[in-house]
Length: 280
Ligand code: PAF
Image (cartoon, rainbow, N blue to C red; front, side, top):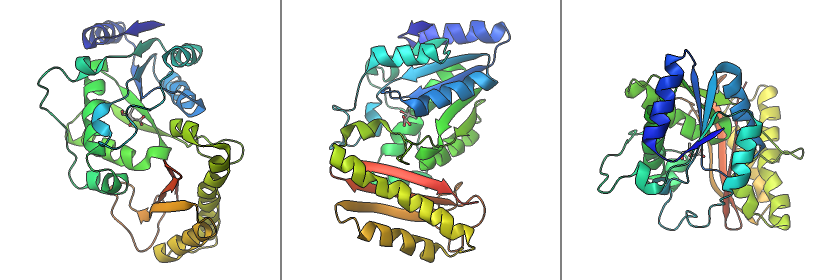
């Protein structure tokens, strides 16, 4: 497995690889890789000849009071995981490499970027769209792989890829959970043992909403109310949002249909966690 630090190296590799007839799969990450990322790399290996994993903690998607500085960094272990899963390349640029001095170009997906996580984290999706556009272009990716856990991010990136007429297809992979239900996230590392137990309320709530929807309940208000009842028993958890939205537009819906996104974000202590389900 090769490790590249510059866009020029990645681009040259991508050109040679495509010339040799390989499709390129890109798995953009911020490192602190876990089994969820491993599943993305495996999915990419399954449909692309060569896979590049980017590891870059992107400063532009963090707000001024967010966790950019303390975001977990574990480069050696990340490379070992990427290699074990069959990645051909790890791309780990510096901030200056992706944002050259004087950088003034950003990708703004209007409307969608201000919904769900974008409403609570102003500027977050502008940073995500900007860095993912840079990565997709540099890697000349045929497909890029993202987890459904970041469902709003997926909606923003699909819109961006369509609007910019990017070649890359945005592929979404299922949420990977711990055996007890907790959705995998690099931020789970912040949780104390007690907070981790409390955090299970999120996945419990997702399961209950799925069960309620399976009985035929379609009213968004009823699904949200059921979710709120579960959190009411957990005063240590602070809800950021509970939303039932069209997954493509992130606009709230009154009545859920197949493919509707039910999403939640909540603070467990100082850690903000998200979870969701796509209603059947
Ligand atoms: O999902 C993430 O880890 C990040 O938002 C991404 C897509 C790698 C962009 O920095």
